[in-house]
Image (tube, rainbow, N blue to C red):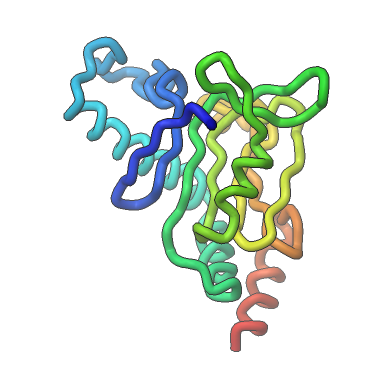
Length: 187
């Protein structure tokens, strides 16, 4: 079984590895340090992490939230969002996108398959070292296309891309047309 921890935040379900969730990158400029976090602070920190990931993945491009909501209606999914916050890596022997937890590696695609259709969106907050592609049958998946960090995102070294079931990856220039088509289908 995967060594992921779970936190049911107000806005989403968060599956995480402590080394990724409580890394210095998440608390840069804060006085919080992993060793000094007590239980109450960790719960509060997980709420902040969840909100930050949602804001980064869904609010930087308002069309992403629209795509998620339209797909949710089309697929008749609940409104909950699910987040994977872990260190991503490549399985060198197999060439698969993996995430790392407690000295073991797990398939990102298998995690998607396990949660697909249970949530309106799956947000993958983990590095994607070789721009591995993923797929889903029901849920929108939003994932980085490179090694992810807030700094890399701000510098334009990584992009966050939505994957829509039966459509595939959505380029920025296609968003408006896809939204228009999805709205027509729902009428």
